Image (cartoon, rainbow, N blue to C red; front, side, top):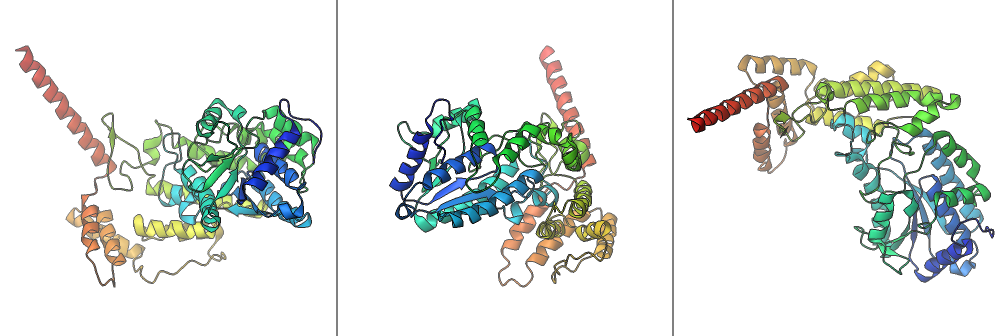
Length: 479
């Protein structure tokens, strides 16, 4: 344990003493959020060093170190976290400390690619940031709730600091109870928040990491170098929706489109040893372009997943991605996936995600062509090792789709409407009680089945009628 004074205004020993006091007084399991960045690394290191001075009989409370893997983390950070997880478990066992490392991941149904490509959700923005809840908050909270249900209460140690930003300081002050070391979590019952580095400055953090060795055997200088090359901050463990977005000067998801630019990735790819990540940056930028107001209509339908058309300022809002663009995204992703698997041994999408995207396309987007399988075979070849699940209940194919569309055209009925009704009937085959199917059919029939062209033309006519009415009223009033 470091005995030198490194922090500017706080004595190092005081922090160790506070950590030991909390640990020995509140005999509840600890959960440390670890992102591999500077703040979470310092938090874990201080706690580790403090606990290492306790007598064996005082080490009765377990400490869980959890790292969140969204599936689209910056590859360098993902690799760094994996190394740390292994090192933490090994060193804790060797030093007889009750510490274990765990990685939490989102359910496949909540993954980035399943929602972006499978459901057609538009890329996340500041006004529609669907990713944080699904990919960060839920996995972390699931782990916390599991421990709360097992032990009654837990202490969640976070590497957050007031000096990070004005927003962060305001948030910490909101939840911090004056004179109390712990504060209740805003939404997780039984969870208490502990922030041991809350009053440290960024300079404090770097000074400590540069002048001390990691107690679990990792090299802090590598972390310092990585930040220096990327000029980046880190994103703390996310257990609520108030955490700031990544993308602009922060390490986070390489797909992040919440900010205009990923400056940390841009800085990294300018270096020869990291130029291989340029393809990821290019793909991220392509996805970002679909969020631009002047470009949205090229990629997105006016009809949402709920079947409704929403208007704003007299214009229909661009909602989910067009199915053809979803197929383009999948092809681009698989082409990159193949390249990165072969050259970097880094997978970008899992087979479980592909299975779920395929299921969603076939059941919700009426993809009787089985496009996921076709696109995958076009990229990887028909002899690829992936074994596609066989769906005994799905009896429709591309030939039947052509017959259906031809018949619907003859009768002036939207083919997608009939296909969706058929899918609803298929889901209810064999059920003893079929009373819910009538509500489902009603919802389907109530959806807006006009084409984008019809929607725009109808809206134009509606506006023209409104203008004429205004003119008529003005003429009447004038006379």
